[in-house]
Length: 405
Image (tube, rainbow, N blue to C red; front, side, top):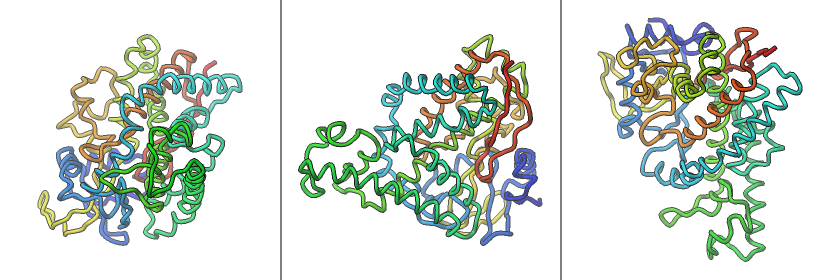
């Protein structure tokens, strides 16, 4: 089968191609790249890739290029060590404490949208909300979020490039800024008598000397008697910032796009807000914000009669697995009555050790956005069919023009 993940027709709507791959070519080889790219699309194959990290490694990165990024894009036990550093910031109890703040922020953004008659739901709500939230968690000043969004988008847009230098400029600019934030905190700590070899009690430092946020936590954190180097801190913060905004923006735009495209579904939510959590999960299943990520096999394997050489780049295609008819009934229908036992099986946040740490946060932002907009604008309508964002691994709308009069 002829399939090119970078071709315009595939970028426009990949799901018919995924269906054909699942049915007739469950292991596809795309040779027109710097090296062969393999694509797996069946649910069982993708879940195996996600849970069997001994065979399917993240060591060489989760993008088409080979790159050793480390930190969250690594394998256990290294990955486990880094995961511990951010676990508290994204723990359910910590996220639950932010609910009122997120709800208030949504209301403020919708107030501005209504006051200024802003018709692009992407620019008014879906884009700023996740950036503001992740900026607060990490400790990035909110006045700088537009610049961070530009750096983040530029890095994602370069994901398909075979030239690593294409993402170097925005990555270096973001790292320079983040290092400045780290050094400002480090200087405050030094003035308070702290040094990196004779620590004071961290509990007395966070919230007192420096802000209680992820940047501060990563600066002070010690797990298994080792601290991060600055280069490791920058890699980790970059991964969190890049991964923590566009994916939730895409979830929100995709969700409204599908609901307003089948207007009776949106009307059901207006009448019955209790369906909103189901709408969020069905959107995640139907339109995976991350269509898939790559792994590298640690040994040669044969799958569905296809030989995959050791250390090949293989895509675990979440967007295809989420519409596998062997798992989801009528998978190409967006349904608000889909059983929870099916919805719980979607892979949009990954699975196993690399399950997205921000999953609950993303769900919460989408839930409050849909609650507030459907309450305030029961007559909301879609004006035009929106275009998708550029990164081939991501699936979302870059604008969503609506009206409510």
